[in-house]
Image (cartoon, rainbow, N blue to C red; front, side):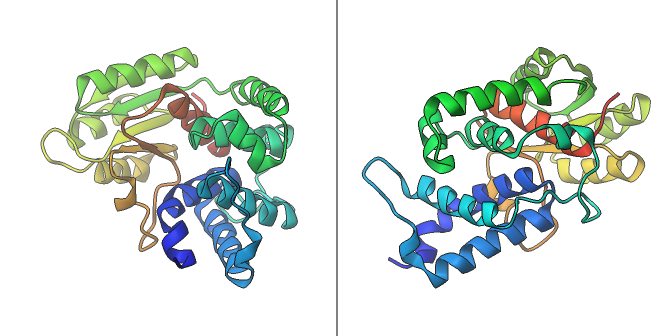
Length: 259
């Protein structure tokens, strides 16, 4: 089996992770490309063991590339982000947090990726939660046409201390709610109640407000194609509360939005 066949199923999630880790689509994708190029040169560098899946081994290999590059964070302008939260959160705390909360790895798997013990990973996660959630309270607009999912999202962001400005089920309703009370964060479904597009609603909102948007979809592969500008923050349905919390924290963390 070729390298492409072995690792292609994991690339959309790896790209999502790289973007969250680095802070931008450009730097995240460059990181993944560098990792794949290195892997093509030395395919034997990935060691899969009985207790390590190919996905875990791939992330572990890519972290070696990340470490060798110095692990620089790029902002939306291509420069290092000046935000003091980025300065204060150590890279390994951020990595452990993302690997477990966003990517769904167990603490043991995250330990294998980062070459740390389970105890070290657990401590890093505790530290990351504490630091990321400080000073990030904001207003959240939820664009979701399924009432139960919208209620779940409201409960999750409420646990983080955020308030919800409203629930929109259509493109027009989403734009009206944003204009009425500007949000600091948008959670956006892709397909809305009247067959309108959540992507288009988000694009219209972004014309007026500089706000992070987290997209929600059951089909992330349709968005992470590499053929067009893609969302930096993506939640896959069905989602886990910790995954939503991780995405919210990272979106606010990198965009510095608060309200």
